[in-house]
Figure 1: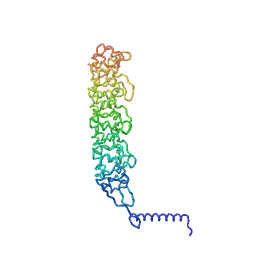
Figure 2: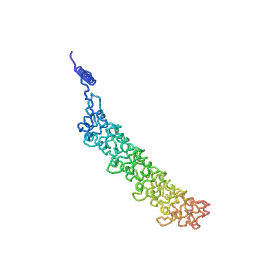
Figure 3: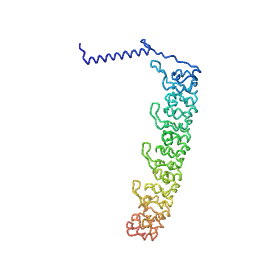
Figure 4: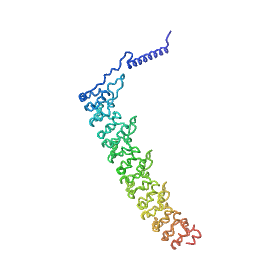
Length: 496
């Protein structure tokens, strides 16, 4: 029968499959010792005397199996620096037919690492890649835990060794983190290459318990070598760890301007009531603006809470955000924090004219009755004009409320009355809103002269109570024009 091309192709595939099946079966039999094929012929594990261990050269160490390393017991410490440096992260004499072995460095037992000096630990695997750096990252977890349970060993870890450790090993250092050298603390990374054993950066892995053991000077080193700024990277601490750090007044006082400016706004509130311990330079560096991100939703000043602002002294408020021009930027506080500030008479008394100039028409009413504690200089410099914006819909004087005006003394009212317009006339009293002007009390208006009321509007005059109208000096009442009196009631007119 004639074979077609299709049949020939099918026959060829069948033959190939049969060959693969036969080969696999043969390998299986060989691996199991059957079929008459080769079996595992690995030489028995060797045992070494202390003298032999001490005499091992680097090339001798490369052939050691895990069983042989473990069998050395405490005599493992007798290996020369050359031998230790040639121990590998891999397996010696790898043979797939035989029972798998552990890697050389991984096979070192906790009891054995405990016998090594810091100098010997520095040699482990250091010659295997030409870096000269010990391969501590390839120690098994229990052995690494035993190593870092020793403060002397922790203090001896180098920056190059540390940077190779996976994040799962950072926490194993535990409370002995305080023994890490300054160069190692400086080498802490803000980034990570995610793997099963490496799930976070070295800074992000620091626990609250660990950060509590670091001194302010050690915190200044933390991650400072990760870029060219030499600034500690506090912003990369996880939230719980940062909270623990700033729960310590001494740590808060030690925060620097450059560290603080990198903090996201979500971290500002975590400082809590310890905000009062921030240094003057840090308070001065508080920003009024922000670049919005997921972690930064507000400016630093805008993030200050009412509870925090209540703890700052008038002197600290004078410093707040002042780094650019020596003027406090407290008006950039959110309304609830600004209201809390104004609830303290001493804080209101301390406000300067330059600071007050930044306040908007929405800020002025927050003073409430405590407006009476503003200095005469501030009152005299309140703005009668304004540039319209979303936060400025009227002038500062127009924004004064009826409640606020009622709290002012006669002398304070006269400060407004004596404000001059561009023509040099003392017409400041006319800048009040109709409702505010109408709230003037009899005791507040007795010193108003005809020259003070020439710009008062008909609506303002009509808003005055009969008692207040009557309290005006007779000459002042007689000075009102027909136009000004046009909205007065019959009763009010009878008093003019």
